[in-house]
Length: 122
Image (cartoon, rainbow, N blue to C red; front, side, top):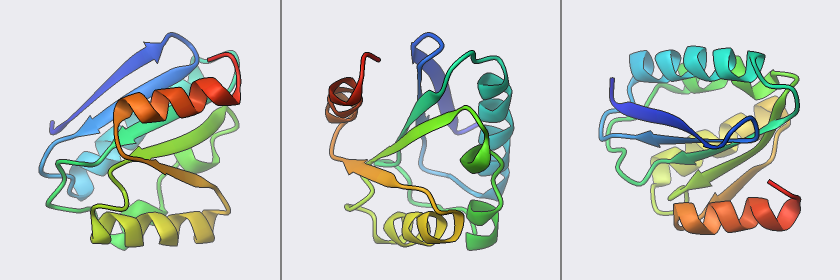
C-alpha cells in the first residue's frame, strides 16, 4: 500500500499521506479504509490528504466515484500540496464541482491542522 492513514485527533481528524504512486487501486483501498473509519465516528470527521509526493495519479473516473465524499459523517476535506501538483489540482477541481463539495488547499500538514483548528474545536 502506498498511503498511510491515521487519526490525528481521535474521532475528529484523519490524516492520509500518499506515496509516489496514487493509482486507482491505491485510491480505492484508501476510500474503503476511510469509509470504514467514518462509519465508526460519532460526529463529522475532517480529513487532511497530503499529496505532495504523488507522481502517479488515479484516473478521473476513480477520483469521481469514491464513496467518502458523500458519507454523512464526512467533514472538511483539506488537501496538502494541491496547487503544486497540476494534475491533482485538476482532479480535485473536477471532484469538487461534480460532488458539490469544498476542498481547501494548504501548503503543509501543520497549516492544514491550524486551518481546521481555526474552524472549530478539533
